[in-house]
Length: 332
Image (cartoon, rainbow, N blue to C red; front, top):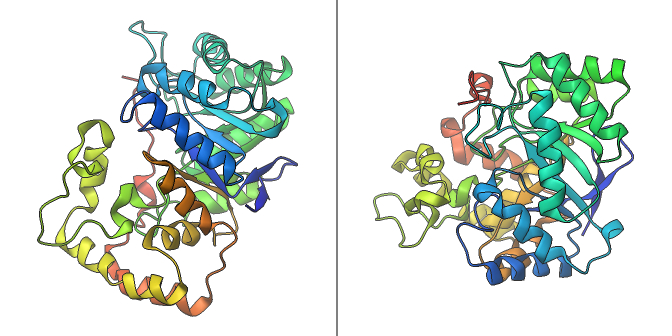
């Protein structure tokens, strides 16, 4: 495993992070989820990402159980707040009330005194940003989080938050966006804004929900049990890639992966790590062997000619529109 600093901070995280968005407490059994975390630990992964809303709060509990017995100082634990964790109007968003209650709930479920990184899961258009940032600053000063970050924020939102963070002297160090060979919407605006503000990217879905493994073939039925057929597994999100034009282009990556001595999934993960603003790529898994294989992307360097060949193979199916960075207008 190799390590990078997260943004302009002194915090080192593993290049490959383990995330449990679609698996723990939802898509796979608890024993399998724990086995995946153990495989990640065995492979040298020290960075673990979750969120209070994943699997209706169950994901945090499963992750805590999987990490039980590991010395707390030996891993970095990240969670998030924003999405609903209850039915009340204040059980969501980035108000001071929800952030304070959110961190208390997460710490209890994660069975820890602090998280290394506490992230705003989306931007909240209904709460003044000053209120949000002050609440995060207080969470840090109370020692309940060491650093703060955001997820899927637009460039202008990152710039505004960074300005307030400097005034409050609170360490805002990261953004967590979707990023892959097929989904590059952060490159034009979010990455430059993050570099300016001192934030690093912790990217999710580097394999494009499995599309970049090559298992989905143009003109063929979807494989049984795949994420594209599982409503709990992000089928709605993967649908944007499920057309013959995209899948045909992805097939052109197979000889390039073979040329590099990598699996398709390893090539996809290694690709996002070539971006110098990316601090880590988050992988998920339903089986331990998926973890073991995908972590082999750590430390891989792709030469310029291969990167050019990847761009040529994918052509115009790559999504680059910065306006598609997620930023919901309502908490509901």
